[in-house]
Amino acid sequence: MVKVLPSLLASDFLNLESEMKRMEEAGADIFHLDIMDGQFVPNISYGIPVCEAISKKTNIPLDVHLMTEDPEQFVEEFRDMGVDYLSFHIEATPHAHRLITHIQNNNMKAGIVLNPQTPVKDVEYLLDIVDFVLVMTVNPGFGGQSFIESGVKKIAELDSIRTRENYDYLIEVDGGVNDETARVCREAGADLLVSGSYLFKADNTKETIDKLRG
Ligand code: DX5
Ligand code: ZN
Image (cartoon, rainbow, N blue to C red):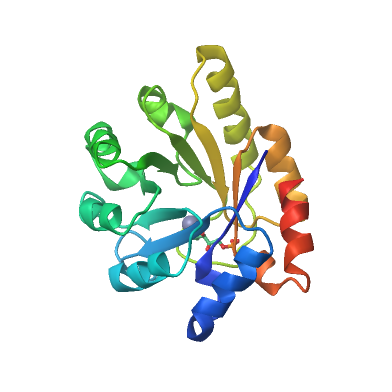
């Protein structure tokens, strides 16, 4: 069963707690938290104290997506707040293999993220150890952008490698996910669908989550 991950970047920050409740009551599976540093991506989102506050107010799992340089920093802080999934960009570090092991040694699921320009072959050597691969279907840094279709081929490629090699990583998709693009991603083999602006703007949250799940 596909899981739906609201991206809290699209929430009303002044009413974060009620926004989280709204998503939980509508059946959200996991919260997606976007960390941006103004260096790796041209935007700054929110940081450790906000994530800590979020972690204290929810019982559903947390998925932290690091769009930062030096993603090695703060692994312990995220572990301490009970984060379940922690991912970083392959483009952001020359030590991806080491960092994946480090995240897993801190009892979190480790994910590797691919920008739209990065081919699957760049992470192939990690596929036997990662817990999940996050395929970006927008250029990271902002919510509300349009889905980049070429991501679908990467999802299908990851799905076929997984079957061929008998690997068990999950495939996550982030960026421009709406009910139409969600369907295409599910058909290509995606397991985790992040949705920000589309989901938060929808009139009926529960219906929208159910539709995204397929
Ligand atoms: C973009 C972020 C996404 C973003 C998705 O850099 O990684 O998680 O919040 O937002 P939508 O669904 O609006 O594209
Ligand atoms: Zn994200």
